[in-house]
Amino acid sequence: MSRPISAQINLTALKHNLSIVRQYAKHSRIMAVIKANAYGHGLIRVAKTLTNIDAFALLEIEAAIQLREVGIHQPILLLEGFFSESDLTSINQYRLDTVIHHPEQLMMLANYRTDKKINLFLKINTGMNRLGLTPREGAKAIHTLKNLPHVGEITLMTHLACADDPAAHREINDQLTIFSEVPSITHLPCSLANSAATIQYPQTHQHWVRPGIMLYGASPLIHRTATELDLNPVMTVSSKIIALQQLNTNDKVGYSGAFQAQQPMQIGIVAAGYADGYPRHAQTGTPIIVNGQRTRIVGRVSMDMLAVDLTGIRNVTLGSPVILWGDHLPIEEVAKAAGTISYELFCSLSSRVKVMTIE
Image (cartoon, rainbow, N blue to C red; front, side, top):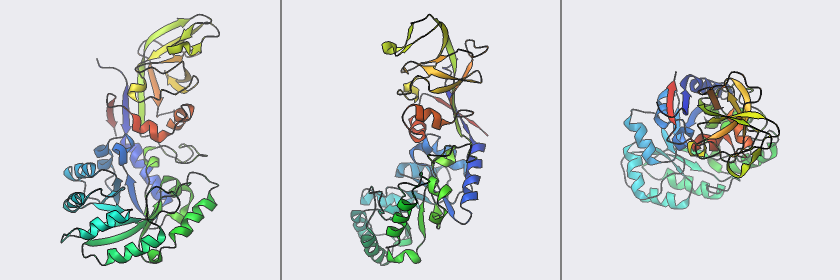
């Protein structure tokens, strides 16, 4: 029998969450962000499930080629664009769309020769200050691109830095104002909205929305839970109790004795640790579910194990089920207790964790 930790990927929940995106952005096309192995959920698994999506977005050409080789036909956008002229050959061959965010990319594209059209997303830096051209550079780039015979459809895009904050109206409006300085904005399609903006800033929806985290059932907002947003968890990570320990008062648990019993108590040892992707910095008190009952972890998370408080938890034996996050335990709660975000936990799931798919 193999080690009991596993991740269940609920494809019905994934489809449901896409339907929620559609409710928010009724008049926009939807580009599912499936970078980082679909936020740890499985690139091909997710892409094959979202059969009626309008497009996909990711980073690596290699990942895009994988999708083409398994029959994914929708447009696929490379969010960081290309890194060399040789990449353009693959973009051309596999019918990929690409972001242009730097003058160097524009120059490489201008020097490339092909009879096929390449669709582009021209990224404008409106305040995130990661990638993108200034509005003035963007206007010049549009003029250049429209005179290149191998350029197809041009879409303008940006990324909103504060869309997760319901009080960020000023910041959002400032970015929209900068975006509107590109003269061609009135007649080129646009893409601005990530998950958070899709939910709470409808003025950003435009032609395309780009949901990521909400597709996987986690909230992109700092003030509302996934449950409140009617998002269902796609990933549930579970394990089992593999040992029981009875503690006396003042007994310590784990490395450095980080937890000390204040009274006699029972703890359980769970087959899950930071080598599986559970956050090492999760503190005593981080929520966890044992045998269907909510409790807390105690002590430091080890590489392969963690300890849980069984005080008041009924009928626990060796093999009792444990939910680390997912069904009935939102990943945001675990992430908050560990001082991180749900995105990082999803992406940290280890390859040694078995993944099972349920419909």
